[in-house]
Length: 508
Image (tube, rainbow, N blue to C red; front, top):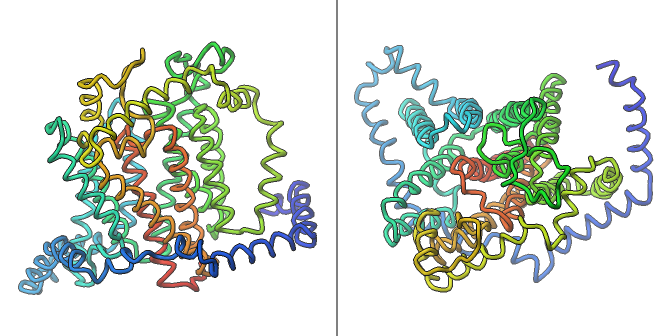
Protein backbone atom coordinates (compact mmCIF):
# COMPACT_ATOMS: atom_id res chain seq x y z
CA UNK A 1 0.00 0.00 0.00
CA UNK A 2 2.87 2.38 0.84
CA UNK A 3 4.53 1.72 -2.53
CA UNK A 4 1.26 2.46 -4.28
CA UNK A 5 0.78 5.74 -2.43
CA UNK A 6 4.37 6.83 -3.15
CA UNK A 7 4.30 5.87 -6.84
CA UNK A 8 4.64 8.43 -9.61
CA UNK A 9 1.29 7.39 -11.10
CA UNK A 10 -0.50 8.00 -7.80
CA UNK A 11 1.06 11.47 -7.43
CA UNK A 12 0.19 12.31 -11.03
CA UNK A 13 -3.41 11.20 -10.54
CA UNK A 14 -3.66 13.24 -7.32
CA UNK A 15 -2.37 16.33 -9.13
CA UNK A 16 -4.87 15.87 -11.97
CA UNK A 17 -7.77 15.43 -9.55
CA UNK A 18 -6.68 18.44 -7.49
CA UNK A 19 -6.41 20.58 -10.61
CA UNK A 20 -9.85 19.42 -11.73
CA UNK A 21 -11.41 20.17 -8.31
CA UNK A 22 -10.19 23.79 -8.53
CA UNK A 23 -10.98 24.25 -12.21
CA UNK A 24 -13.77 26.12 -13.90
CA UNK A 25 -14.69 22.90 -15.70
CA UNK A 26 -15.50 21.26 -12.35
CA UNK A 27 -17.60 24.23 -11.25
CA UNK A 28 -19.41 24.13 -14.59
CA UNK A 29 -20.04 20.39 -14.21
CA UNK A 30 -21.46 20.87 -10.69
CA UNK A 31 -23.78 23.63 -11.90
CA UNK A 32 -24.82 21.58 -14.90
CA UNK A 33 -25.60 18.61 -12.63
CA UNK A 34 -27.66 20.80 -10.30
CA UNK A 35 -29.52 22.24 -13.30
CA UNK A 36 -30.26 18.71 -14.58
CA UNK A 37 -31.61 17.71 -11.17
CA UNK A 38 -33.86 20.77 -11.10
CA UNK A 39 -35.15 19.98 -14.57
CA UNK A 40 -35.99 16.44 -13.51
CA UNK A 41 -37.67 17.56 -10.29
CA UNK A 42 -39.54 20.54 -11.74
CA UNK A 43 -40.05 19.84 -15.43
CA UNK A 44 -43.64 19.16 -16.49
CA UNK A 45 -42.28 16.82 -19.21
CA UNK A 46 -39.49 14.97 -17.40
CA UNK A 47 -41.20 14.64 -14.02
CA UNK A 48 -43.93 12.24 -15.26
CA UNK A 49 -41.22 10.16 -16.99
CA UNK A 50 -39.10 9.87 -13.85
CA UNK A 51 -41.73 9.48 -11.16
CA UNK A 52 -43.42 6.22 -10.32
CA UNK A 53 -46.50 5.67 -12.48
CA UNK A 54 -50.04 5.24 -11.19
CA UNK A 55 -50.06 1.52 -11.98
CA UNK A 56 -46.79 0.91 -10.11
CA UNK A 57 -47.95 3.02 -7.12
CA UNK A 58 -51.23 1.17 -6.82
CA UNK A 59 -49.68 -2.32 -7.19
CA UNK A 60 -48.86 -3.02 -3.48
CA UNK A 61 -52.44 -2.25 -2.39
CA UNK A 62 -54.17 -3.95 -5.32
CA UNK A 63 -56.28 -7.08 -4.96
CA UNK A 64 -54.17 -8.86 -7.59
CA UNK A 65 -50.94 -8.20 -5.66
CA UNK A 66 -52.45 -9.29 -2.34
CA UNK A 67 -53.83 -12.48 -3.89
CA UNK A 68 -50.54 -13.31 -5.61
CA UNK A 69 -48.60 -12.56 -2.43
CA UNK A 70 -50.94 -14.79 -0.42
CA UNK A 71 -50.51 -17.67 -2.87
CA UNK A 72 -46.71 -17.58 -3.13
CA UNK A 73 -46.33 -17.19 0.65
CA UNK A 74 -48.82 -19.95 1.49
CA UNK A 75 -46.14 -22.69 1.73
CA UNK A 76 -44.12 -20.52 4.11
CA UNK A 77 -47.14 -19.89 6.36
CA UNK A 78 -48.01 -23.57 6.44
CA UNK A 79 -44.42 -24.46 7.33
CA UNK A 80 -44.45 -21.84 10.08
CA UNK A 81 -47.63 -23.33 11.58
CA UNK A 82 -46.09 -26.78 11.43
CA UNK A 83 -43.04 -25.44 13.26
CA UNK A 84 -45.19 -23.89 16.00
CA UNK A 85 -47.01 -27.19 16.52
CA UNK A 86 -43.74 -29.06 17.04
CA UNK A 87 -41.61 -26.19 18.30
CA UNK A 88 -39.91 -28.23 21.01
CA UNK A 89 -38.86 -30.93 18.56
CA UNK A 90 -37.47 -28.45 16.07
CA UNK A 91 -35.61 -26.48 18.74
CA UNK A 92 -33.74 -29.56 19.92
CA UNK A 93 -32.97 -30.91 16.44
CA UNK A 94 -29.46 -30.20 15.14
CA UNK A 95 -30.47 -30.55 11.48
CA UNK A 96 -33.50 -28.29 11.91
CA UNK A 97 -31.41 -25.57 13.48
CA UNK A 98 -28.82 -25.98 10.72
CA UNK A 99 -31.54 -25.58 8.08
CA UNK A 100 -32.88 -22.48 9.82
CA UNK A 101 -29.39 -20.96 9.98
CA UNK A 102 -28.82 -21.69 6.29
CA UNK A 103 -32.17 -20.14 5.50
CA UNK A 104 -31.04 -16.93 7.17
CA UNK A 105 -28.02 -16.85 4.84
CA UNK A 106 -29.89 -17.39 1.57
CA UNK A 107 -28.27 -14.36 -0.09
CA UNK A 108 -24.80 -15.64 0.83
CA UNK A 109 -25.62 -19.05 -0.62
CA UNK A 110 -26.88 -17.35 -3.79
CA UNK A 111 -23.59 -15.49 -4.19
CA UNK A 112 -21.71 -18.78 -4.28
CA UNK A 113 -24.31 -20.53 -6.43
CA UNK A 114 -24.29 -17.94 -9.18
CA UNK A 115 -20.51 -18.14 -9.32
CA UNK A 116 -20.61 -21.94 -9.64
CA UNK A 117 -23.48 -21.92 -12.15
CA UNK A 118 -22.00 -19.41 -14.55
CA UNK A 119 -18.55 -20.93 -14.91
CA UNK A 120 -19.77 -24.36 -16.01
CA UNK A 121 -18.47 -24.98 -19.58
CA UNK A 122 -21.07 -24.98 -22.32
CA UNK A 123 -20.39 -28.64 -23.15
CA UNK A 124 -21.34 -29.63 -19.59
CA UNK A 125 -24.15 -27.14 -19.11
CA UNK A 126 -27.78 -28.12 -18.58
CA UNK A 127 -30.49 -25.49 -18.16
CA UNK A 128 -32.03 -27.63 -15.44
CA UNK A 129 -29.12 -26.58 -13.20
CA UNK A 130 -30.52 -23.06 -12.93
CA UNK A 131 -34.00 -24.29 -12.05
CA UNK A 132 -32.68 -26.70 -9.41
CA UNK A 133 -30.36 -24.08 -7.92
CA UNK A 134 -33.07 -21.49 -7.41
CA UNK A 135 -35.52 -24.09 -6.14
CA UNK A 136 -32.93 -24.94 -3.49
CA UNK A 137 -32.59 -21.25 -2.63
CA UNK A 138 -36.38 -20.97 -2.43
CA UNK A 139 -36.43 -23.90 0.01
CA UNK A 140 -33.72 -22.21 2.07
CA UNK A 141 -35.78 -19.02 2.15
CA UNK A 142 -38.81 -21.00 3.35
CA UNK A 143 -36.64 -22.71 5.97
CA UNK A 144 -35.61 -19.30 7.27
CA UNK A 145 -39.27 -18.22 7.37
CA UNK A 146 -40.21 -21.44 9.15
CA UNK A 147 -37.71 -20.89 11.94
CA UNK A 148 -38.06 -17.14 12.39
CA UNK A 149 -41.47 -16.24 11.01
CA UNK A 150 -40.27 -12.85 9.74
CA UNK A 151 -39.28 -13.86 6.21
CA UNK A 152 -41.59 -13.75 3.20
CA UNK A 153 -41.47 -13.56 -0.57
CA UNK A 154 -41.59 -9.89 -1.54
CA UNK A 155 -44.16 -9.75 -4.34
CA UNK A 156 -44.86 -6.07 -3.70
CA UNK A 157 -41.21 -5.11 -4.21
CA UNK A 158 -41.00 -6.90 -7.56
CA UNK A 159 -43.76 -4.78 -9.05
CA UNK A 160 -46.68 -4.99 -11.45
CA UNK A 161 -44.89 -5.13 -14.80
CA UNK A 162 -42.73 -8.21 -14.04
CA UNK A 163 -45.90 -9.99 -12.88
CA UNK A 164 -47.59 -8.91 -16.13
CA UNK A 165 -44.66 -10.19 -18.16
CA UNK A 166 -44.70 -13.59 -16.48
CA UNK A 167 -48.45 -13.79 -17.06
CA UNK A 168 -47.78 -13.13 -20.75
CA UNK A 169 -45.16 -15.90 -20.70
CA UNK A 170 -47.77 -18.38 -19.48
CA UNK A 171 -50.24 -17.19 -22.13
CA UNK A 172 -47.45 -17.55 -24.69
CA UNK A 173 -47.50 -21.29 -24.01
CA UNK A 174 -51.29 -21.49 -24.24
CA UNK A 175 -51.45 -19.77 -27.64
CA UNK A 176 -48.20 -21.20 -29.00
CA UNK A 177 -47.93 -22.80 -32.43
CA UNK A 178 -45.45 -25.30 -30.96
CA UNK A 179 -46.78 -25.91 -27.47
CA UNK A 180 -44.38 -28.73 -26.55
CA UNK A 181 -41.35 -26.60 -27.42
CA UNK A 182 -42.87 -23.62 -25.60
CA UNK A 183 -43.21 -25.64 -22.40
CA UNK A 184 -39.43 -26.12 -22.47
CA UNK A 185 -38.94 -22.36 -22.76
CA UNK A 186 -41.46 -21.85 -19.94
CA UNK A 187 -39.08 -23.72 -17.63
CA UNK A 188 -36.33 -21.22 -18.51
CA UNK A 189 -38.61 -18.31 -17.64
CA UNK A 190 -39.68 -19.99 -14.39
CA UNK A 191 -36.00 -20.21 -13.43
CA UNK A 192 -35.59 -16.49 -14.16
CA UNK A 193 -38.75 -15.65 -12.18
CA UNK A 194 -37.46 -17.66 -9.20
CA UNK A 195 -34.16 -15.78 -9.49
CA UNK A 196 -35.96 -12.43 -9.21
CA UNK A 197 -38.26 -13.49 -6.36
CA UNK A 198 -35.51 -15.14 -4.31
CA UNK A 199 -32.96 -12.35 -4.83
CA UNK A 200 -35.30 -9.48 -3.94
CA UNK A 201 -36.80 -11.37 -0.99
CA UNK A 202 -33.49 -12.65 0.43
CA UNK A 203 -31.66 -9.31 0.47
CA UNK A 204 -31.73 -7.77 3.94
CA UNK A 205 -28.41 -5.94 4.29
CA UNK A 206 -25.74 -4.10 2.34
CA UNK A 207 -23.24 -6.86 3.12
CA UNK A 208 -25.49 -9.41 1.42
CA UNK A 209 -25.78 -7.13 -1.60
CA UNK A 210 -21.98 -6.94 -1.75
CA UNK A 211 -21.83 -10.75 -1.59
CA UNK A 212 -23.99 -10.99 -4.70
CA UNK A 213 -21.76 -8.48 -6.48
CA UNK A 214 -18.74 -10.54 -5.37
CA UNK A 215 -20.27 -13.67 -6.89
CA UNK A 216 -20.76 -11.80 -10.16
CA UNK A 217 -17.16 -10.54 -10.00
CA UNK A 218 -15.89 -14.06 -9.47
CA UNK A 219 -17.73 -15.16 -12.59
CA UNK A 220 -16.15 -12.29 -14.53
CA UNK A 221 -12.65 -13.12 -13.28
CA UNK A 222 -12.73 -16.87 -13.95
CA UNK A 223 -14.52 -16.71 -17.31
CA UNK A 224 -12.27 -13.88 -18.51
CA UNK A 225 -9.11 -15.67 -17.40
CA UNK A 226 -10.21 -18.76 -19.31
CA UNK A 227 -10.95 -16.61 -22.37
CA UNK A 228 -7.47 -15.09 -22.27
CA UNK A 229 -5.97 -18.57 -22.00
CA UNK A 230 -8.03 -19.54 -25.05
CA UNK A 231 -6.40 -16.75 -27.03
CA UNK A 232 -2.91 -17.61 -25.80
CA UNK A 233 -3.41 -21.28 -26.69
CA UNK A 234 -4.00 -20.36 -30.34
CA UNK A 235 -7.76 -20.41 -30.79
CA UNK A 236 -8.59 -20.80 -34.49
CA UNK A 237 -10.54 -18.08 -36.28
CA UNK A 238 -14.16 -19.12 -36.84
CA UNK A 239 -15.22 -17.52 -40.14
CA UNK A 240 -18.91 -17.84 -39.27
CA UNK A 241 -18.45 -15.18 -36.54
CA UNK A 242 -16.84 -12.46 -38.67
CA UNK A 243 -16.72 -11.06 -42.21
CA UNK A 244 -13.20 -12.05 -43.25
CA UNK A 245 -13.27 -9.73 -46.27
CA UNK A 246 -13.45 -6.70 -43.98
CA UNK A 247 -11.57 -8.18 -40.99
CA UNK A 248 -8.83 -10.27 -42.59
CA UNK A 249 -6.30 -9.42 -39.87
CA UNK A 250 -8.66 -9.85 -36.91
CA UNK A 251 -7.66 -12.60 -34.46
CA UNK A 252 -10.02 -15.26 -33.13
CA UNK A 253 -13.02 -14.21 -31.05
CA UNK A 254 -12.94 -15.73 -27.56
CA UNK A 255 -16.05 -17.31 -26.04
CA UNK A 256 -14.79 -18.63 -22.66
CA UNK A 257 -17.24 -21.07 -21.03
CA UNK A 258 -19.99 -20.11 -23.48
CA UNK A 259 -20.81 -21.31 -26.98
CA UNK A 260 -20.66 -17.97 -28.73
CA UNK A 261 -18.46 -14.84 -28.42
CA UNK A 262 -21.54 -12.59 -28.50
CA UNK A 263 -23.04 -14.52 -25.58
CA UNK A 264 -19.84 -14.15 -23.56
CA UNK A 265 -19.73 -10.44 -24.33
CA UNK A 266 -23.33 -10.05 -23.13
CA UNK A 267 -22.46 -11.80 -19.86
CA UNK A 268 -19.55 -9.38 -19.35
CA UNK A 269 -21.77 -6.43 -20.25
CA UNK A 270 -24.20 -7.40 -17.49
CA UNK A 271 -21.64 -8.24 -14.79
CA UNK A 272 -18.71 -5.87 -15.34
CA UNK A 273 -20.57 -2.84 -13.90
CA UNK A 274 -21.19 -4.82 -10.69
CA UNK A 275 -17.47 -5.63 -10.58
CA UNK A 276 -16.61 -1.95 -10.92
CA UNK A 277 -19.09 -1.13 -8.15
CA UNK A 278 -17.34 -3.64 -5.91
CA UNK A 279 -14.05 -1.80 -6.47
CA UNK A 280 -15.65 1.50 -5.52
CA UNK A 281 -17.39 0.29 -2.36
CA UNK A 282 -14.92 -2.26 -0.96
CA UNK A 283 -13.38 -1.14 2.32
CA UNK A 284 -10.29 -3.34 2.34
CA UNK A 285 -7.28 -3.14 0.04
CA UNK A 286 -7.26 -6.90 -0.64
CA UNK A 287 -10.87 -6.94 -1.82
CA UNK A 288 -10.26 -3.84 -3.94
CA UNK A 289 -7.27 -5.51 -5.59
CA UNK A 290 -9.26 -8.69 -6.29
CA UNK A 291 -12.15 -6.74 -7.78
CA UNK A 292 -9.74 -4.58 -9.79
CA UNK A 293 -8.07 -7.68 -11.18
CA UNK A 294 -11.45 -9.14 -12.13
CA UNK A 295 -12.44 -5.88 -13.85
CA UNK A 296 -9.14 -5.68 -15.74
CA UNK A 297 -9.44 -9.30 -16.92
CA UNK A 298 -13.07 -8.68 -17.90
CA UNK A 299 -12.17 -5.56 -19.87
CA UNK A 300 -9.46 -7.40 -21.79
CA UNK A 301 -11.79 -10.32 -22.47
CA UNK A 302 -14.56 -7.95 -23.60
CA UNK A 303 -12.18 -6.54 -26.19
CA UNK A 304 -11.26 -10.04 -27.35
CA UNK A 305 -14.91 -10.93 -28.02
CA UNK A 306 -15.01 -8.32 -30.81
CA UNK A 307 -18.75 -7.93 -30.17
CA UNK A 308 -19.67 -4.45 -31.38
CA UNK A 309 -23.19 -4.37 -29.90
CA UNK A 310 -21.83 -5.30 -26.46
CA UNK A 311 -19.08 -2.68 -26.77
CA UNK A 312 -21.63 0.04 -27.47
CA UNK A 313 -23.86 -1.25 -24.68
CA UNK A 314 -20.94 -1.27 -22.23
CA UNK A 315 -19.98 2.29 -23.18
CA UNK A 316 -23.57 3.38 -22.50
CA UNK A 317 -23.54 1.48 -19.20
CA UNK A 318 -20.39 3.31 -18.10
CA UNK A 319 -21.90 6.69 -18.99
CA UNK A 320 -25.04 5.88 -16.97
CA UNK A 321 -22.98 4.60 -14.03
CA UNK A 322 -20.81 7.74 -13.87
CA UNK A 323 -23.87 9.96 -14.26
CA UNK A 324 -25.70 8.24 -11.39
CA UNK A 325 -22.70 7.72 -9.11
CA UNK A 326 -20.70 10.97 -9.50
CA UNK A 327 -22.10 13.26 -12.23
CA UNK A 328 -19.31 15.81 -11.70
CA UNK A 329 -16.79 13.25 -12.99
CA UNK A 330 -18.55 12.99 -16.35
CA UNK A 331 -16.26 15.51 -18.15
CA UNK A 332 -13.14 13.73 -16.88
CA UNK A 333 -14.55 10.36 -17.95
CA UNK A 334 -15.37 11.61 -21.45
CA UNK A 335 -11.93 13.19 -21.84
CA UNK A 336 -10.23 9.97 -20.71
CA UNK A 337 -12.32 8.00 -23.22
CA UNK A 338 -11.20 10.28 -26.04
CA UNK A 339 -7.56 10.07 -24.94
CA UNK A 340 -7.77 6.27 -24.86
CA UNK A 341 -8.88 5.95 -28.50
CA UNK A 342 -5.37 6.23 -30.03
CA UNK A 343 -4.12 3.50 -27.69
CA UNK A 344 -6.72 0.94 -28.76
CA UNK A 345 -5.35 -2.12 -30.60
CA UNK A 346 -5.63 -1.72 -34.36
CA UNK A 347 -7.93 -4.76 -34.68
CA UNK A 348 -10.40 -3.32 -32.15
CA UNK A 349 -10.35 0.14 -33.73
CA UNK A 350 -10.92 -1.37 -37.16
CA UNK A 351 -13.76 -3.52 -35.79
CA UNK A 352 -15.45 -0.41 -34.36
CA UNK A 353 -15.20 1.38 -37.70
CA UNK A 354 -16.92 -1.53 -39.50
CA UNK A 355 -20.13 -0.60 -37.67
CA UNK A 356 -20.56 2.15 -40.27
CA UNK A 357 -19.55 -0.02 -43.25
CA UNK A 358 -22.63 -0.92 -45.29
CA UNK A 359 -20.78 -3.80 -46.96
CA UNK A 360 -20.30 -5.68 -43.66
CA UNK A 361 -22.11 -9.01 -44.01
CA UNK A 362 -22.76 -9.30 -40.26
CA UNK A 363 -24.59 -5.96 -40.25
CA UNK A 364 -26.46 -6.60 -43.51
CA UNK A 365 -27.61 -10.06 -42.37
CA UNK A 366 -29.67 -8.45 -39.60
CA UNK A 367 -32.06 -6.58 -41.89
CA UNK A 368 -33.80 -9.72 -43.24
CA UNK A 369 -34.04 -10.94 -39.63
CA UNK A 370 -35.61 -7.66 -38.51
CA UNK A 371 -38.03 -7.82 -41.42
CA UNK A 372 -39.09 -11.38 -40.59
CA UNK A 373 -39.70 -10.43 -36.96
CA UNK A 374 -41.80 -7.43 -38.01
CA UNK A 375 -43.82 -9.67 -40.33
CA UNK A 376 -44.66 -11.98 -37.41
CA UNK A 377 -45.71 -8.99 -35.30
CA UNK A 378 -47.85 -7.63 -38.15
CA UNK A 379 -49.66 -10.97 -38.57
CA UNK A 380 -50.04 -11.81 -34.86
CA UNK A 381 -49.69 -8.55 -32.91
CA UNK A 382 -51.86 -9.58 -29.95
CA UNK A 383 -50.83 -13.16 -29.20
CA UNK A 384 -47.49 -13.56 -30.97
CA UNK A 385 -46.29 -16.85 -32.43
CA UNK A 386 -45.75 -18.43 -29.01
CA UNK A 387 -43.15 -18.60 -26.28
CA UNK A 388 -39.63 -19.44 -27.42
CA UNK A 389 -37.53 -19.06 -30.54
CA UNK A 390 -38.84 -22.39 -31.91
CA UNK A 391 -42.38 -21.03 -32.25
CA UNK A 392 -41.20 -17.95 -34.13
CA UNK A 393 -38.95 -20.07 -36.35
CA UNK A 394 -41.87 -22.31 -37.28
CA UNK A 395 -44.19 -19.38 -38.05
CA UNK A 396 -41.54 -17.64 -40.15
CA UNK A 397 -40.92 -20.82 -42.13
CA UNK A 398 -44.63 -21.58 -42.49
CA UNK A 399 -45.42 -18.20 -44.07
CA UNK A 400 -42.07 -17.79 -45.84
CA UNK A 401 -41.16 -14.50 -44.17
CA UNK A 402 -37.39 -14.95 -44.33
CA UNK A 403 -35.24 -14.87 -47.49
CA UNK A 404 -31.51 -15.11 -46.80
CA UNK A 405 -28.75 -17.68 -46.96
CA UNK A 406 -28.10 -17.95 -43.21
CA UNK A 407 -30.81 -19.83 -41.23
CA UNK A 408 -33.35 -17.89 -39.19
CA UNK A 409 -32.68 -18.42 -35.48
CA UNK A 410 -34.21 -15.29 -33.93
CA UNK A 411 -34.91 -11.65 -34.82
CA UNK A 412 -31.53 -10.37 -33.52
CA UNK A 413 -33.42 -7.69 -31.58
CA UNK A 414 -34.75 -8.35 -28.10
CA UNK A 415 -37.75 -6.03 -28.52
CA UNK A 416 -38.86 -7.56 -31.82
CA UNK A 417 -38.28 -11.09 -30.53
CA UNK A 418 -40.25 -10.60 -27.29
CA UNK A 419 -43.19 -9.10 -29.20
CA UNK A 420 -43.01 -11.81 -31.89
CA UNK A 421 -43.13 -14.50 -29.19
CA UNK A 422 -45.51 -13.05 -26.60
CA UNK A 423 -47.57 -10.44 -28.40
CA UNK A 424 -48.33 -6.95 -27.23
CA UNK A 425 -48.97 -8.00 -23.61
CA UNK A 426 -45.51 -9.54 -23.32
CA UNK A 427 -43.90 -6.54 -25.01
CA UNK A 428 -45.60 -4.09 -22.63
CA UNK A 429 -44.68 -6.28 -19.65
CA UNK A 430 -41.04 -6.52 -20.74
CA UNK A 431 -40.50 -2.85 -21.58
CA UNK A 432 -42.54 -1.76 -18.56
CA UNK A 433 -40.49 -4.01 -16.25
CA UNK A 434 -37.18 -2.63 -17.44
CA UNK A 435 -38.28 1.01 -17.46
CA UNK A 436 -39.83 0.66 -14.01
CA UNK A 437 -36.75 -1.12 -12.66
CA UNK A 438 -34.37 1.48 -14.10
CA UNK A 439 -36.52 4.36 -12.84
CA UNK A 440 -36.82 2.88 -9.36
CA UNK A 441 -33.09 2.21 -9.12
CA UNK A 442 -32.15 5.64 -10.46
CA UNK A 443 -34.58 7.35 -8.07
CA UNK A 444 -33.12 5.43 -5.12
CA UNK A 445 -29.58 6.38 -6.14
CA UNK A 446 -30.45 10.08 -6.51
CA UNK A 447 -32.07 10.22 -3.05
CA UNK A 448 -29.61 8.04 -1.12
CA UNK A 449 -26.39 9.05 0.65
CA UNK A 450 -23.10 7.64 -0.59
CA UNK A 451 -22.63 4.01 0.32
CA UNK A 452 -22.28 0.48 -0.99
CA UNK A 453 -26.02 0.05 -1.60
CA UNK A 454 -26.13 3.23 -3.68
CA UNK A 455 -23.05 2.27 -5.73
CA UNK A 456 -24.15 -1.30 -6.50
CA UNK A 457 -27.69 -0.17 -7.31
CA UNK A 458 -26.31 2.40 -9.74
CA UNK A 459 -24.12 -0.29 -11.34
CA UNK A 460 -27.05 -2.69 -11.77
CA UNK A 461 -29.16 0.11 -13.26
CA UNK A 462 -26.31 0.98 -15.65
CA UNK A 463 -25.91 -2.67 -16.68
CA UNK A 464 -29.62 -2.87 -17.52
CA UNK A 465 -29.41 0.31 -19.60
CA UNK A 466 -26.39 -1.05 -21.46
CA UNK A 467 -28.10 -4.37 -22.15
CA UNK A 468 -31.18 -2.59 -23.50
CA UNK A 469 -28.95 -0.71 -25.95
CA UNK A 470 -27.16 -3.94 -26.90
CA UNK A 471 -30.58 -5.56 -27.37
CA UNK A 472 -31.29 -3.29 -30.31
CA UNK A 473 -28.85 -5.36 -32.39
CA UNK A 474 -28.98 -8.73 -30.65
CA UNK A 475 -31.31 -11.07 -28.79
CA UNK A 476 -29.69 -11.48 -25.39
CA UNK A 477 -31.97 -14.32 -24.30
CA UNK A 478 -31.00 -16.73 -27.06
CA UNK A 479 -29.07 -18.60 -24.34
CA UNK A 480 -31.21 -19.23 -21.22
CA UNK A 481 -28.18 -18.81 -18.95
CA UNK A 482 -27.81 -15.21 -20.16
CA UNK A 483 -31.54 -14.70 -19.59
CA UNK A 484 -31.09 -15.71 -15.96
CA UNK A 485 -28.09 -13.39 -15.57
CA UNK A 486 -30.15 -10.56 -17.08
CA UNK A 487 -32.96 -11.04 -14.55
CA UNK A 488 -30.42 -11.48 -11.73
CA UNK A 489 -29.05 -8.00 -12.47
CA UNK A 490 -32.62 -6.70 -12.62
CA UNK A 491 -33.26 -8.23 -9.17
CA UNK A 492 -30.04 -6.70 -7.80
CA UNK A 493 -31.27 -3.29 -8.98
CA UNK A 494 -34.63 -3.77 -7.24
CA UNK A 495 -33.06 -5.23 -4.09
CA UNK A 496 -30.50 -2.44 -3.96
CA UNK A 497 -33.22 0.18 -4.38
CA UNK A 498 -35.12 -1.42 -1.50
CA UNK A 499 -32.04 -1.24 0.74
CA UNK A 500 -31.43 2.38 -0.28
CA UNK A 501 -35.00 3.26 0.72
CA UNK A 502 -34.73 1.40 4.04
CA UNK A 503 -31.35 2.87 5.06
CA UNK A 504 -30.72 6.09 3.11
CA UNK A 505 -27.87 7.02 5.45
CA UNK A 506 -26.00 3.74 5.22
CA UNK A 507 -22.37 4.38 6.14
CA UNK A 508 -20.90 1.41 4.23
